[in-house]
Image 1 (spheres, helix red, strand yellow):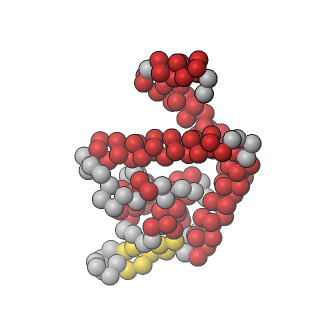
Image 2 (cartoon, rainbow, N blue to C red):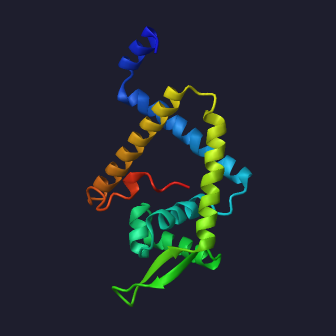
Image 3 (cartoon, rainbow, N blue to C red):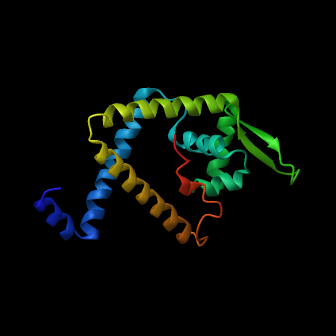
Amino acid sequence: MSAGAAALAETVSAEAAASGLGAEMVRLMRLFAAWTQRAGFECGAADRVLLARLVTCGRCRATDLAADVFLDLSTVSRQVRSLVDRGLVERHPDPEDRRGSLLGATEAGRAAYRSAVRRREAELTRLLEPWPAEDRAHLTRLLKRLNDDLVDSTYTSLGTGQHPVGEARQGDLHA
């Protein structure tokens, strides 16, 4: 980093950084949404998040799934119904409470998840290949830090404090 860039970095207020970051995050989400649409993913973004949780963390109740991905239970129930109808998720009896059920990814769901991850990683590899290794590592480290802080902030604002098992914080919820 040049001396001028270092001096500028020290004088940027948190408010100015938040404004710039916010604009770039909106732009990133729009670009990512456009890319996934062009790539023809089998599942939409919301479906991929639920499927990622079920594939990476295993079976769980719908209420736990909703809490893990920060969505309302009614929203998750609707999305799960669609995933079940498409054969990507299945319901299993809950051995601890026969009135309830556990949700789990089917083999087709796991395959769809793996395909989405491979395609995303291939595209990001293509984009990041020309970057210096230090820049790639720096971006990954800072984005993980931002995501971790967002998870902590979300649980704090919900009044639940830290996530009890930390799944969302581990970075497993990607697809």
